[in-house]
Length: 474
Image (cartoon, rainbow, N blue to C red; front, side, top):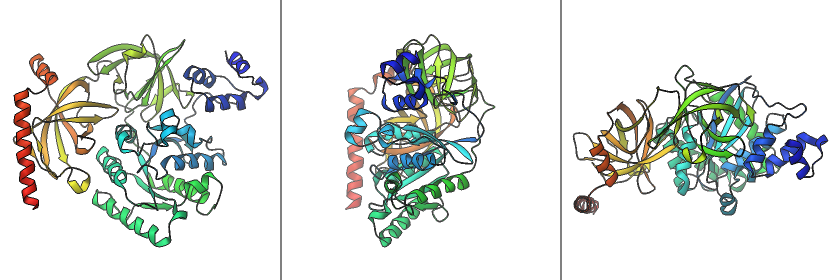
């Protein structure tokens, strides 16, 4: 098969390694990628070697501050030390819409190494319209690099991404102040002060957080090494030194939240995601649950960054080939789990915090029985919030809230989640207990939503509250 493909592309077999890599870099045909990725090339390595600690990190920050440029620059600089393969900017922003609009939409995954660790790097979208995909990427991170342009300083998505990182539980943050060649020294110092204040405001140690200043574009273009390549090397040394080795739940039953689903002609359905808990081996029996679905299957193959894995461990970003499962039976947000160990739930008890306006939230209270959109792991779904023992929650308050989920999803005690409303993050929470499944009558009522009379009463009450707050501000 590989010979046929190489012939079709008019590449001689004697330059197999070079030609396979070239096709992989240029093609968007997943069947071709899958086939060529498995070609046993002379001197190549098709089995993933677990000889270094694996860690998941990523870039977050406002749109156009240089996250994707920095990601590409890291691979370029490390490739000179044979620790990475260069990933060009347009290989990371690889969707047609991304290239057209010049922004990252989906979370991109890039592989590289340092002398200390093997890294999977997630480049998260900074545009406000794609915050859902940013949440998915951040959920997989064990450390984050916040990219801030020296020319702009803190911007809306800088604050929102950092807030989400804190809510999701990312404790390890390093700041890369980018584009320092386009700003004067006073501006750079002011931006650093502004970021440290924001870090402290959100619960990080702003004074102790490590900063690296440079120009990712200079590193990409091999210009001004003192702010280009040297800043990238300093950044990666800081990541190695500052970020502690991750602690993984390898002793728990396996849980793989699905991020993407692909159909590979002649092979079957492949799902990708970060293994959250446990260990998976080839020919492992599993269940697929979520969105009210339940399928049984067998994992017939495992890969990570186009290398086969005899065994995947918690923390690995992997692709799993599923036996007898069709593409339309699986979707993002479902989870592959050990049979009998996890359940999809639609009613949970939680402890939640409502963000204040200065934290990126709202200045109005949230009424009980209103709906929001819940983001947890890779899934998102409409939920009804039933505030316990009171009829509303104010910004800056904590409250015990029961969530009714429109579709049964995988959640358990300790699961973290975010609630958004009208493209705005308004609450964050943690599951404290799983409640019994909703009765058929409760589920029917949840799916139908409020009656016209109930909606009118709720709208009237909200209007009264808004007018009351407006009067107070006068």
